[in-house]
Length: 558
Image 1: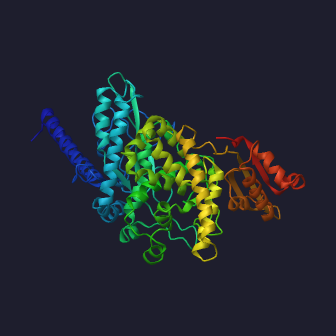
Image 2: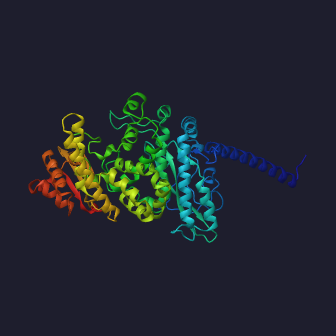
């Protein structure tokens, strides 16, 4: 039987429709798989923790917002309708180890979704985002674009956005190990094509590498077993809250100070990095205040080493001392070192968050961050005092008592150290009670006089020295080959013996002389290169270029 041209066309069309249906079903099935991998837990009003697998793309201009419509299920979580910015698409749904993601969800996701600590921390994030939303749309610094109904609607959905948790760093070229939070921009375009950009963030929870034989690195599965994963997430969540509050373009600057030698609770870095990390450590210590995390837990249960330093030590102000703990031989950090130590800033912030007399200290902290974007702790406190003048007495007590008045009057700090020394001597039966009473009376009298001056209006950070930064590159050569390279930036008014020795510039007797001279005169002034040259000596100074030493004076002041 011959087929007509019409019959042929109908049959061909039918085959094409069938093929299209098959392709549609396949695509729908693949899409459903992607949605299942990225689907959040909607069991609580706060949406909870989303274990996702987005691959974040970067534009030619870095992280600048760009306009793109997207139907990706992950993007829908960030506010949904109309034209919004997004970088998210599923990498695991494209065949990149979905089993790893599923295992991560079963282990870390299940633990975190059931954690009361995480639920409380998510409530804090939601509270912070409501404050940020209010400030952007109706606060003193609001913009007309942010007050647009479309932008307000998306911001309100942003408040309820789930916490995006990733098992691996998804950004090409930025692979790293260990837990970390990453900010990225969102944007809304209104009907006049005006863009309102703000920030969100995701958290990567990945295993850390071991950096020393004594260190216990962070491990996801082990942290679930020893019940510390939620504290690690709290730390990164706090970073995300700060990213939210600072927004574009300030997030490109926050925490990016001159120091380049890493950071830990006891390490002296710079004021910007100490501010960023100190806030997160305080948040972590606050939510871990009912946990008992000790060195015994590190050796017996595999608790990550960095967690030991960020809990009880923060709450007990141990990082005020150069040795990490107070004893008869210990010396307190100077004002510059305190403000550049994340452990000290964490202790200060913990005292603020835990203080009921301040009334809503967390909410006020977020308000200060949104309105002023302070670059360090001193700027934060001064902004607080300006925005909330009724808190002056309480805030000054927290800051000045915690730092033993080092940022306001170093002579009071010296009296405290003497009082501490004689009190310890009395406890070990090597001192007299009368000597201890005299030292205590002298310290209490001096600190109350200093407090009265600060309360009357003096700057609580008036004794904070200037920063004298310089960059140093020290190459050690043997047989014409470089065997060691030390590249670091140091602030001469906060650098300690450890970093000075690492720089290779001084012999140990010179290091002691350098620090003793600084302590005697309070701090150094002038050009940091000239200060270094004076201590190194002219004869050796001339030989430094041949030894492979270079200086970078253009780094100078931040």
